[in-house]
Length: 269
Image (cartoon, rainbow, N blue to C red; front, side, top):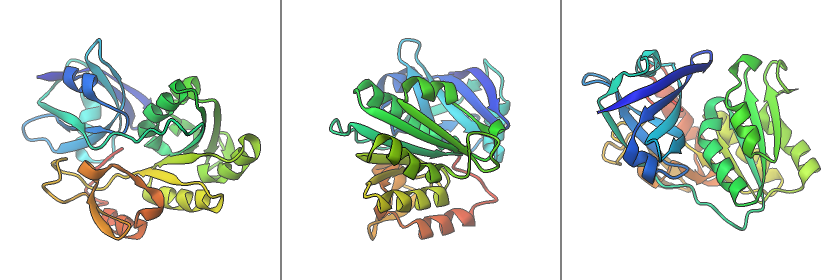
């Protein structure tokens, strides 16, 4: 049985949680996630892996305590046992070694799935520019980690208490002015944030990849809860994704579907 090694609140209701998971730590690749089943009567929760330590057999998660199950996980102290950890799940990110000037745009805890990608491109020698958006300064997370692997970093906040006042997508044009046109943009965050960021990037002829977060239950494609419409075709985010071509995603259907379950938060990233 796996266990929680440490749990630290890094922002209000947001915890960085390290757990033991030796096999996942060995096999995981950026873009993939896991399913956590804390106790016998707990809900199965899909969570993004932020980083791994194969030598220690540990992985790091960033969890926002919104629903009952995520609050349960965030309240558990170090040493607490975890009934089941399933993963790695999903398709690994497609890394293109030809991308030399790569942009990353995040909203809130969307920086969590992007961080491993930023690190990977940084290690490949690409210029990595990261635009991070938060509601307010107190919601800032992973800044130190990101700055270590980002060539350039710009931050925006809704209330202007941190960096530029506005949204992360508002920084795309200034970033292009400073560092030239980007080869590609990776986006993660709330659905509407991703939708508008894809549209903004498209204005400059920049193709995008988004990390989707629909409802998931089993994580293997059997329940069908994570169905998304991609280019007019039904895909399952848990096995076909969670990353997709941003311009092919039907964000309207995705937003409507997620709105149905807004009082029963099951997919927290």
